[in-house]
Amino acid sequence: MKSYYASIDHLMLLDQLAVHIKDRRVLNLMGQYLRRTSERGGAFWDYQQGISLGCPLSPLIGAFFLNALDAAAAKLHLFYVRFMDDILILAPTRWQLRGAVKVVNQLVFGSSSPAFGLANSERRPALAVLQSASGADDL
Image 1: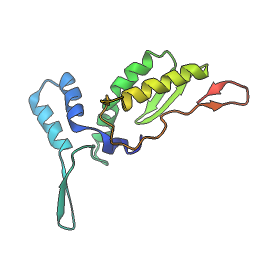
Image 2 (image 1 turned 45 degrees about the vertical axis):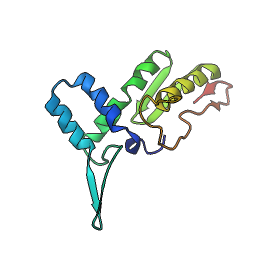
Image 3 (image 1 turned 120 degrees about the vertical axis):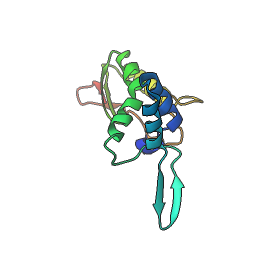
């Protein structure tokens, strides 16, 4: 996905946070963090989606937002590692890797209702299948 931070849906993120944060004051503070206003040359605009770049809280929020992807990847029983929105999955066969690609795309982009609210982000392949010199299918 392109522009991961800018693509995060505020309402979906607040819903996910509400499951783990019971204090309404903290949730209110998170809502204020998300609903920010910028100014340039006298023009003001409110952000309807995305999280702030450069804020110390943003990497934590970005990682939290993909927690469901981590849980789904664990059920695949394949080698999986993620750093923010960069994902690496290794599988012994091409077919297992293609199944993993399907799971990632369904979770991130969904069919009609994306699980992460990233429908407006520009799609790029989440994973690519490469043939190694030894004949094994790798990522």
